[in-house]
Image (cartoon, rainbow, N blue to C red; front, side, top):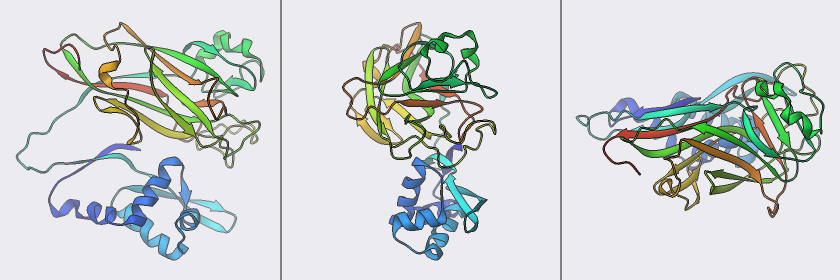
Length: 313
Protein backbone atom coordinates (compact mmCIF):
# COMPACT_ATOMS: atom_id res chain seq x y z
CA UNK A 1 0.00 0.00 0.00
CA UNK A 2 1.36 3.44 -0.91
CA UNK A 3 1.77 5.84 2.00
CA UNK A 4 -0.07 8.83 0.53
CA UNK A 5 -1.41 10.42 -2.64
CA UNK A 6 -0.66 14.07 -3.45
CA UNK A 7 -3.40 16.17 -5.05
CA UNK A 8 -3.71 19.77 -6.19
CA UNK A 9 -6.34 22.09 -7.66
CA UNK A 10 -5.66 21.23 -11.28
CA UNK A 11 -7.79 18.97 -13.49
CA UNK A 12 -5.20 16.21 -13.07
CA UNK A 13 -6.62 15.51 -9.62
CA UNK A 14 -10.25 15.65 -10.76
CA UNK A 15 -10.71 11.83 -11.07
CA UNK A 16 -9.92 11.45 -7.37
CA UNK A 17 -12.35 14.17 -6.30
CA UNK A 18 -15.06 12.67 -8.52
CA UNK A 19 -14.43 9.19 -7.11
CA UNK A 20 -14.83 10.51 -3.56
CA UNK A 21 -18.07 12.36 -4.35
CA UNK A 22 -20.28 9.35 -3.67
CA UNK A 23 -21.63 7.95 -0.39
CA UNK A 24 -21.39 4.43 -1.84
CA UNK A 25 -17.74 4.79 -2.80
CA UNK A 26 -16.90 6.31 0.58
CA UNK A 27 -18.51 3.28 2.23
CA UNK A 28 -16.49 0.96 -0.01
CA UNK A 29 -13.28 2.64 1.16
CA UNK A 30 -14.36 2.22 4.80
CA UNK A 31 -15.20 -1.45 4.28
CA UNK A 32 -11.83 -2.13 2.68
CA UNK A 33 -10.01 -0.66 5.69
CA UNK A 34 -10.98 -3.80 7.62
CA UNK A 35 -10.15 -6.45 5.04
CA UNK A 36 -9.85 -7.06 1.27
CA UNK A 37 -13.22 -7.90 -0.30
CA UNK A 38 -14.39 -9.04 -3.72
CA UNK A 39 -17.07 -7.29 -5.78
CA UNK A 40 -19.79 -9.71 -4.71
CA UNK A 41 -19.02 -9.17 -1.01
CA UNK A 42 -18.97 -5.39 -1.43
CA UNK A 43 -22.27 -5.50 -3.32
CA UNK A 44 -23.91 -7.51 -0.53
CA UNK A 45 -22.56 -5.16 2.15
CA UNK A 46 -23.90 -2.10 0.31
CA UNK A 47 -27.18 -3.64 -0.86
CA UNK A 48 -26.38 -3.21 -4.55
CA UNK A 49 -26.13 -5.47 -7.57
CA UNK A 50 -22.73 -6.78 -8.63
CA UNK A 51 -23.03 -4.86 -11.91
CA UNK A 52 -23.51 -1.52 -10.13
CA UNK A 53 -20.73 -2.35 -7.66
CA UNK A 54 -18.36 -3.13 -10.53
CA UNK A 55 -18.85 0.41 -11.84
CA UNK A 56 -18.06 1.91 -8.43
CA UNK A 57 -14.97 -0.28 -8.03
CA UNK A 58 -13.74 0.71 -11.50
CA UNK A 59 -14.16 4.41 -10.61
CA UNK A 60 -12.11 4.02 -7.42
CA UNK A 61 -9.44 1.97 -9.20
CA UNK A 62 -9.10 4.51 -12.03
CA UNK A 63 -8.59 7.22 -9.41
CA UNK A 64 -5.82 5.19 -7.80
CA UNK A 65 -7.67 4.84 -4.49
CA UNK A 66 -8.00 1.06 -4.56
CA UNK A 67 -6.36 -1.79 -6.42
CA UNK A 68 -7.68 -5.22 -7.25
CA UNK A 69 -6.40 -8.56 -8.41
CA UNK A 70 -8.15 -11.42 -10.15
CA UNK A 71 -8.38 -14.50 -7.93
CA UNK A 72 -10.18 -17.83 -8.43
CA UNK A 73 -13.43 -18.22 -6.50
CA UNK A 74 -16.29 -20.68 -6.14
CA UNK A 75 -18.18 -19.05 -9.00
CA UNK A 76 -15.18 -18.29 -11.23
CA UNK A 77 -12.55 -15.55 -11.29
CA UNK A 78 -13.32 -12.65 -8.93
CA UNK A 79 -11.90 -9.16 -8.34
CA UNK A 80 -10.46 -8.92 -4.81
CA UNK A 81 -10.15 -5.26 -3.83
CA UNK A 82 -7.93 -3.53 -1.26
CA UNK A 83 -6.89 0.08 -0.49
CA UNK A 84 -4.08 1.54 -2.60
CA UNK A 85 -3.23 4.54 -0.39
CA UNK A 86 -3.31 5.38 3.30
CA UNK A 87 -3.83 9.14 3.07
CA UNK A 88 -4.42 12.04 0.71
CA UNK A 89 -2.59 15.37 0.66
CA UNK A 90 -4.16 18.38 -1.08
CA UNK A 91 -2.02 21.41 -1.91
CA UNK A 92 -4.25 24.44 -2.41
CA UNK A 93 -1.63 27.04 -3.37
CA UNK A 94 0.66 26.25 -6.28
CA UNK A 95 3.30 28.60 -4.91
CA UNK A 96 3.21 27.11 -1.43
CA UNK A 97 6.42 25.34 -0.45
CA UNK A 98 6.30 21.56 -0.24
CA UNK A 99 6.67 20.49 3.37
CA UNK A 100 8.83 17.42 3.72
CA UNK A 101 8.09 15.41 6.83
CA UNK A 102 11.10 14.07 8.64
CA UNK A 103 10.79 10.99 10.75
CA UNK A 104 12.56 8.26 12.67
CA UNK A 105 11.08 4.83 11.93
CA UNK A 106 11.82 1.75 14.00
CA UNK A 107 10.70 -1.72 12.99
CA UNK A 108 9.65 -4.04 15.80
CA UNK A 109 9.84 -7.65 14.59
CA UNK A 110 7.27 -9.94 16.19
CA UNK A 111 9.82 -11.91 18.22
CA UNK A 112 11.72 -8.92 19.63
CA UNK A 113 9.46 -8.47 22.66
CA UNK A 114 11.03 -7.69 26.03
CA UNK A 115 8.29 -8.96 28.36
CA UNK A 116 4.96 -10.78 28.27
CA UNK A 117 2.18 -12.30 30.32
CA UNK A 118 0.20 -14.93 28.47
CA UNK A 119 -1.78 -18.10 28.96
CA UNK A 120 -2.81 -20.77 26.40
CA UNK A 121 -3.98 -20.76 23.75
CA UNK A 122 -0.62 -19.36 22.65
CA UNK A 123 2.32 -19.89 20.37
CA UNK A 124 4.77 -18.42 17.92
CA UNK A 125 6.45 -19.45 14.69
CA UNK A 126 9.05 -18.34 12.19
CA UNK A 127 8.33 -18.31 8.48
CA UNK A 128 9.77 -21.83 8.37
CA UNK A 129 8.54 -23.67 11.48
CA UNK A 130 6.72 -23.54 14.80
CA UNK A 131 8.89 -22.54 17.76
CA UNK A 132 8.62 -25.26 20.40
CA UNK A 133 5.03 -26.42 20.67
CA UNK A 134 1.60 -24.83 20.77
CA UNK A 135 0.06 -23.67 24.06
CA UNK A 136 3.29 -23.74 26.10
CA UNK A 137 4.27 -20.22 27.32
CA UNK A 138 7.78 -21.42 28.20
CA UNK A 139 8.73 -21.29 24.52
CA UNK A 140 8.14 -17.54 24.48
CA UNK A 141 11.64 -17.28 26.06
CA UNK A 142 13.18 -19.69 23.54
CA UNK A 143 16.22 -17.91 21.98
CA UNK A 144 14.87 -18.70 18.51
CA UNK A 145 11.88 -16.44 19.26
CA UNK A 146 13.90 -13.54 17.81
CA UNK A 147 13.07 -14.90 14.35
CA UNK A 148 9.32 -15.24 15.04
CA UNK A 149 7.03 -13.92 12.31
CA UNK A 150 3.70 -14.64 14.06
CA UNK A 151 2.71 -14.59 17.73
CA UNK A 152 -0.62 -15.26 19.43
CA UNK A 153 -2.23 -15.64 22.84
CA UNK A 154 -5.83 -16.16 23.91
CA UNK A 155 -7.92 -14.54 26.64
CA UNK A 156 -6.18 -11.68 28.41
CA UNK A 157 -2.49 -10.87 28.71
CA UNK A 158 0.15 -8.64 27.14
CA UNK A 159 3.29 -8.50 25.06
CA UNK A 160 5.75 -5.61 25.41
CA UNK A 161 8.39 -4.15 23.10
CA UNK A 162 11.28 -1.71 23.61
CA UNK A 163 12.23 0.86 20.97
CA UNK A 164 15.19 3.27 20.92
CA UNK A 165 14.51 7.01 20.97
CA UNK A 166 16.51 8.70 18.21
CA UNK A 167 15.03 12.18 18.71
CA UNK A 168 17.59 14.93 19.21
CA UNK A 169 16.93 17.72 21.69
CA UNK A 170 16.53 20.12 18.75
CA UNK A 171 13.86 17.97 17.07
CA UNK A 172 10.23 18.67 17.97
CA UNK A 173 7.90 15.63 17.68
CA UNK A 174 4.69 16.28 15.73
CA UNK A 175 3.01 12.88 15.74
CA UNK A 176 3.63 9.25 16.54
CA UNK A 177 2.50 6.52 14.14
CA UNK A 178 2.16 2.83 14.95
CA UNK A 179 1.47 0.44 12.05
CA UNK A 180 0.79 -3.25 12.56
CA UNK A 181 -1.10 -6.26 11.23
CA UNK A 182 -3.21 -7.61 14.06
CA UNK A 183 -6.21 -9.83 14.85
CA UNK A 184 -7.91 -11.63 17.73
CA UNK A 185 -7.05 -15.19 18.82
CA UNK A 186 -9.91 -17.68 18.79
CA UNK A 187 -9.82 -21.44 19.30
CA UNK A 188 -9.07 -22.56 15.73
CA UNK A 189 -10.27 -19.44 13.82
CA UNK A 190 -13.39 -17.29 13.88
CA UNK A 191 -13.88 -14.16 11.75
CA UNK A 192 -16.40 -12.89 14.30
CA UNK A 193 -14.47 -13.09 17.56
CA UNK A 194 -14.05 -9.60 19.08
CA UNK A 195 -11.14 -8.68 21.32
CA UNK A 196 -10.50 -5.38 23.10
CA UNK A 197 -6.83 -4.61 22.45
CA UNK A 198 -5.27 -1.81 24.50
CA UNK A 199 -2.27 0.20 23.29
CA UNK A 200 0.03 1.69 25.95
CA UNK A 201 3.21 3.72 25.41
CA UNK A 202 5.63 4.64 28.20
CA UNK A 203 2.97 3.78 30.76
CA UNK A 204 0.32 6.03 29.17
CA UNK A 205 -2.78 4.20 27.92
CA UNK A 206 -3.42 5.52 24.43
CA UNK A 207 -6.63 3.74 23.47
CA UNK A 208 -8.50 0.47 23.24
CA UNK A 209 -9.54 -0.85 19.84
CA UNK A 210 -11.82 -3.84 19.30
CA UNK A 211 -10.49 -6.37 16.81
CA UNK A 212 -13.46 -7.88 14.92
CA UNK A 213 -12.11 -11.42 14.64
CA UNK A 214 -9.41 -14.02 14.11
CA UNK A 215 -9.21 -14.50 10.35
CA UNK A 216 -8.94 -17.96 8.86
CA UNK A 217 -11.41 -18.02 5.97
CA UNK A 218 -8.58 -18.07 3.42
CA UNK A 219 -4.77 -18.19 3.43
CA UNK A 220 -2.88 -14.96 4.04
CA UNK A 221 -1.06 -13.63 0.97
CA UNK A 222 2.31 -14.26 2.60
CA UNK A 223 1.41 -17.04 5.03
CA UNK A 224 3.65 -20.06 4.30
CA UNK A 225 2.18 -23.09 2.55
CA UNK A 226 3.15 -25.39 5.43
CA UNK A 227 1.00 -23.43 7.90
CA UNK A 228 -2.16 -25.21 9.05
CA UNK A 229 -5.34 -23.94 7.33
CA UNK A 230 -7.14 -24.26 10.68
CA UNK A 231 -4.93 -21.64 12.35
CA UNK A 232 -4.64 -17.82 12.16
CA UNK A 233 -4.07 -16.79 8.53
CA UNK A 234 -4.03 -13.00 8.37
CA UNK A 235 -4.96 -9.84 10.26
CA UNK A 236 -6.04 -6.27 9.63
CA UNK A 237 -3.48 -3.59 8.81
CA UNK A 238 -4.11 -0.85 11.37
CA UNK A 239 -2.53 2.58 11.79
CA UNK A 240 -2.64 4.28 15.18
CA UNK A 241 -1.68 7.97 15.26
CA UNK A 242 -1.00 10.05 18.35
CA UNK A 243 -1.09 13.82 17.77
CA UNK A 244 -1.51 16.99 19.78
CA UNK A 245 -5.29 16.51 19.37
CA UNK A 246 -5.62 12.92 20.59
CA UNK A 247 -5.21 9.30 19.52
CA UNK A 248 -6.71 8.05 16.24
CA UNK A 249 -7.12 4.61 14.69
CA UNK A 250 -7.31 4.78 10.89
CA UNK A 251 -8.46 8.40 11.19
CA UNK A 252 -11.16 7.74 13.81
CA UNK A 253 -10.51 9.39 17.18
CA UNK A 254 -10.51 6.80 19.97
CA UNK A 255 -9.23 8.80 22.95
CA UNK A 256 -7.99 12.16 24.21
CA UNK A 257 -4.49 10.81 24.94
CA UNK A 258 -2.19 13.36 23.32
CA UNK A 259 1.40 13.41 22.16
CA UNK A 260 2.31 15.85 24.93
CA UNK A 261 1.03 13.38 27.53
CA UNK A 262 3.78 10.89 26.64
CA UNK A 263 7.35 11.24 27.87
CA UNK A 264 9.02 11.08 24.47
CA UNK A 265 12.37 12.28 25.83
CA UNK A 266 13.18 8.94 27.40
CA UNK A 267 16.18 7.11 25.97
CA UNK A 268 13.91 4.19 25.13
CA UNK A 269 10.19 3.76 24.62
CA UNK A 270 8.05 0.90 25.88
CA UNK A 271 5.10 -0.24 23.79
CA UNK A 272 2.60 -2.64 25.35
CA UNK A 273 -0.17 -4.44 23.46
CA UNK A 274 -2.62 -6.00 25.88
CA UNK A 275 -6.03 -7.48 26.46
CA UNK A 276 -6.88 -6.32 29.97
CA UNK A 277 -8.39 -8.51 32.67
CA UNK A 278 -11.43 -6.23 32.87
CA UNK A 279 -11.93 -6.05 29.08
CA UNK A 280 -15.46 -6.74 27.87
CA UNK A 281 -14.15 -8.83 24.97
CA UNK A 282 -11.20 -10.98 26.05
CA UNK A 283 -10.51 -12.50 22.66
CA UNK A 284 -6.73 -12.56 22.74
CA UNK A 285 -4.25 -11.15 20.26
CA UNK A 286 -2.39 -12.24 17.11
CA UNK A 287 0.51 -10.26 15.63
CA UNK A 288 1.78 -10.80 12.09
CA UNK A 289 5.21 -9.82 10.79
CA UNK A 290 7.30 -10.41 7.69
CA UNK A 291 6.61 -13.86 6.30
CA UNK A 292 3.00 -14.12 7.55
CA UNK A 293 -0.37 -12.52 6.91
CA UNK A 294 -1.45 -10.19 4.12
CA UNK A 295 1.17 -7.44 4.20
CA UNK A 296 4.65 -8.93 4.78
CA UNK A 297 5.52 -6.06 7.13
CA UNK A 298 6.82 -5.85 10.68
CA UNK A 299 5.16 -3.69 13.30
CA UNK A 300 6.64 -0.20 12.92
CA UNK A 301 6.82 2.78 15.26
CA UNK A 302 7.49 6.13 13.58
CA UNK A 303 7.91 9.56 15.14
CA UNK A 304 7.39 12.51 12.80
CA UNK A 305 9.28 15.65 13.78
CA UNK A 306 10.49 19.05 12.68
CA UNK A 307 13.79 20.71 13.41
CA UNK A 308 13.65 23.61 15.87
CA UNK A 309 14.65 24.91 19.25
CA UNK A 310 11.66 23.53 21.16
CA UNK A 311 12.35 20.41 23.17
CA UNK A 312 8.76 19.25 23.60
CA UNK A 313 5.57 19.07 21.53
